[in-house]
Length: 325
Ligand code: BDR
Ligand code: CA
Image (cartoon, rainbow, N blue to C red; front, side, top):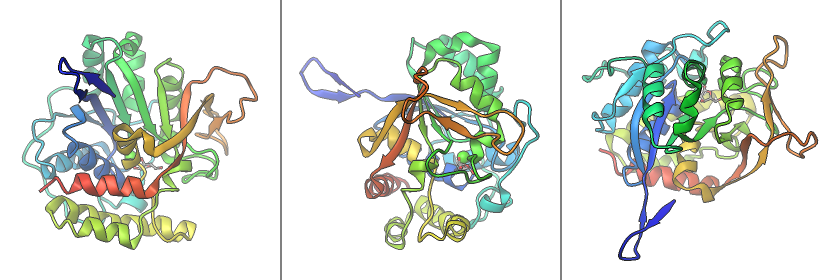
């Protein structure tokens, strides 16, 4: 997105962004990626939700990412500790007991912002200029769903919601058909899908096309700053599970693709489609039902990203991590 200045120079307009996350290794990489991108992203806040691990750990991890990025001015608000209706599920087997496998955690100096993430979303989006704020959703969508239920008018402040979640061509990663974030809180995803906000999904279909390789990880390691060392240590541990499960030579860094999409959408391709999420208890719970061929002629509520330039993604990530200490 760009603006012409009085001198006719094309000046970039920053994206006003709230990042909602459940860190988690790939969330941590996404947060560092975003926090390093100060020229394009005006990060208003990080909001946290229970998901990969319990809320106090996802909130601590978000504060750790903020500390490593030297961005203590960005507030972190803790949100929902349980999904709307379902019993919480966690992914400690993939992300480790602390949510950040492969590294040692400490309690960051700076604490949480006062107040709750849901209240923050309601207040900020109500007061925002019309359609001015982008939300990156990197975990279960509970916080935004609660805010929408509490105050449906917050839609007025939202420009776009960019979600990491769902699966169609790829199949699921927590059940045969469901992806973790949608399975963890399908009812929340349904509230957001039905809200009328412009939605982009980066599902497993694309994240599984953007895999690490030894060469890609080595390039990050060669940066040899604190942030890159943490990223490499976390990734090397985290990717093992997917490499083993799928028999692939590298692992996906799901949530970081959302940040790449915001910074460089031209790296990605997709299609406007109708999407519903299955909320019925049973084997298809949490499945995203994607009308890729427009069979239903139903309203297109999601831009579904299906393809991407994997090397372009890793180059951009590496370039941004190089800016951190
Ligand atoms: C998603 O689930 C979580 O475990 C990851 O952080 C990512 O958001 C991938 O299915
Ligand atoms: Ca996540």
